[in-house]
Length: 115
Length: 109
Image (tube, chains in turn orange, cyan):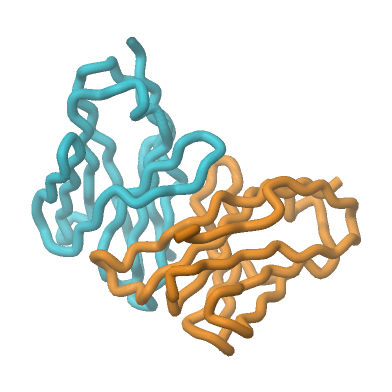
C-alpha cells in the first residue's frame, strides 16, 4: 500500500495563477481532508469529504475548491493564488472519524509558495 | 470558541523523561489524539485517549482528564530521534479534529 500520496512536493506560483494539488489514497477510506499548516498555528481544515460525491467546507475554505469523483482521489484547486496561500498543504484520510483505530493518515505534504 | 493550548518549545536531555501538556476547550469531545511530526514531514499518529486515565505504548504514554480539559504525553528514555514536534488534537462534536500549534521538543545529548 502506498497510503496517501500527494503531488507535487514543491511548487512556486505567481499571484493570480491557478493550480491543482493532487491527493490519492489506496486504503479505501471514506473520509478525506485537506489541511494547511502555517508556522505557529495548528493544522487548519480547508475542505473535507465524507464519501464519493460529497464535499464540505472546513475552517478556511475561501479561495479553494475540491471535488470527490472517486473514493481514491481528492484534488484541491487554488482558483487564483494569493501570497496568503503560501503554506504547507497536507491531505489526510480515515475510515470514519470515530476515534480509536480510525485515525487520520497523512500524505507527505505540498510546500507551496505564492510570489 | 475552540482552543487547544500546548507549550511552544521544550528541551530535554537524552535518556531523560519529558512531559508535554495540552489543555483544551472544544465544542464536544470525541477523543484526544497525539501526533508526532518530524521537521519537513507529515504528522504520524502516536496515541488516542477517549476515557480518563493513562494509555501506555512502549516508551510513550498519554493521560487524559476530561473534567479538567487536560492531557499530557509522557516520553521516557528519550532518544535523539524523538526530536520532533508533538501535536495535540481534539475531535469535536462534529467529528472534526481541532489542532494545537504543536510543541517542538529539542533533545540534547
